[in-house]
Image (tube, rainbow, N blue to C red; front, side, top):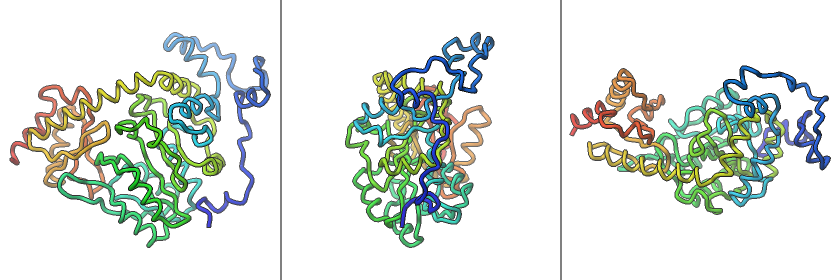
Length: 370
């Protein structure tokens, strides 16, 4: 049985009816400067937009982006040492999640998820009409992580079409080794796909090594420019998968979801990798400083391979009270809404988190328990 939605398997297409100017120029081998067949607002003067953002932004706003994201994929291919055919660019990791479900599942199909992991995935699962089966996290001293054995067992038992795994995990921060992830893939039913959410991949110590960016058949690896690259507001992400998988994803993809401005921004940050790596190094330093500060106040701090720090409280009531009191002070930290992880708090590793007194309410609560 195919791992893709049944209505997509035996049909040629659908195909993008408007592949775009850039794709046509590549096919013809020359530029098309006289664009009088396009229906964008190419003659819009954009005086107000130019005054606020400058002429380059106004120019990008007038035109559709490259539906094939050719330049971004080329730069990614060079950086990750992958063929371009293994890469697909879309409007952030969230959009890629919805895309994978459209390509892999039909209404009523079963999806396996860890109970309390990134909740937007469950939002898309529900919206697509799929049946979700949740698996509890594995937990122990200094350990809170998706349970790979339980995920594999549930996939087999429930005859699942998709297993979702965030790695590094959100909200625990745990990183499973690539060997363990591939072992999970190997234990899944033949027509079941592992959707691997790697939104925090860039904070791995080996993030830029070829081995950490491999194409794994049966796996769709989702990445984002929102964290390490600082482009959350522009919505850019990419998937790593086999060319055959991308061919199916392209059948149901919204082709112009990534704007011209977003593509230009992604090209710019990819052309300056040292800036991204400098940012990642600074985040890691702050993460370790914040973790140590919390430990010094008696917190149960979990190991993290992300841009945040996670701690466990004695129970959900204590976590909710701390969260509520900090909100009243004007400080936002994250408490998962899922009851399975209601005792967890997540704090972003920003300079603001290390300002003296910023988290005193949390520190006081921890001292009261010690």
